[in-house]
Length: 271
Image 1: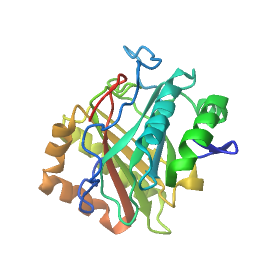
Image 2 (image 1 turned 90 degrees about the vertical axis):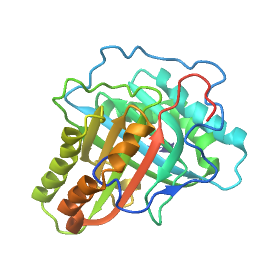
Image 3 (image 1 turned 120 degrees about the horizontal axis):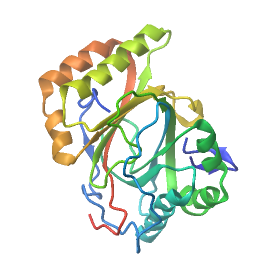
């Protein structure tokens, strides 16, 4: 979680075609800058299963136009290096592959996982995190959006880590006013139905945002993990199914943000 004066800053996928994809012309589906000059601290991921209460933390941010690539590199390096903090069980930061959000547009994403809300709070307040935010993030960003949610799952196949090279679809939903809890449950059932219908999805997580300060009014979130970009695009191309899922919840939604990105290698990568 990114912090401003110790405040929290950093607090997928039935909406595949809610709006036309916006491809960022200056970013390719692979990284164009080095994420690490040497291997960062890492944690063993074998047999690390997702607990019954996993805390998801996602931040979207827009880097200022014409920012020096070395400063972007420093930001991404600094964020990814926070894996060394004991509270963090997964973290990845890098450029967005494409976005389907209008008028909101973002260039970079951070996703991290924690075993509890207390761990997320401790990460947010940690001096190393505060330093990265103040020195490398805030000076080069124009806009930030952040959400946190508790993802409950009884799926033993879920793990904390997201393998390098995975394609991830993040979906954020802003609901119309005065909708009841039954509507949220219906939306979550539709999201879960995506994984049930597409074996390409290796992980799926969804929940209600509990950090509204920088969420821009978006209250529900989901995140779907695919083995690679081709698997994500195969699901996106099934327009009949996607549209049927969209029709189930269309009347409840005021706005949708959909962002796709690729998990970088922990070693230096050139995309």
